[in-house]
Image (cartoon, rainbow, N blue to C red):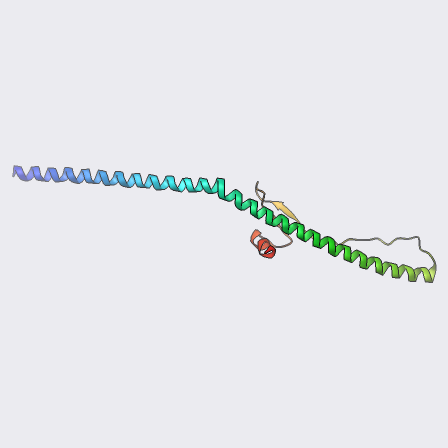
Length: 141
């Protein structure tokens, strides 16, 4: 009976030690995994996101420059067309009534291009192209 009691106590001690070792190992692995996740988040914040933002900003700026140049070209064509129309009208008017001293009010139709900085980053969203950056990128590509 005494031998049986010692055997049970030894097993209990061995089980307790095994449980402690296993628990320590699991806690250690959990800590290492947590540190790895924190490291990846820090790396993403410091390396990947600024690069993605920079590339997105460059794409949007080039798209905005392209759109503005297209708008200027369209505006120039419209103004030339209006000038031709007004010249023909003025010539007809001068032929009918003599030289005119009045100038017609000239209005320019500028495209509605707006951009705003989101948060404190350099991300721009072009509202005339869509309601989100994704839609803007789709139209740029």
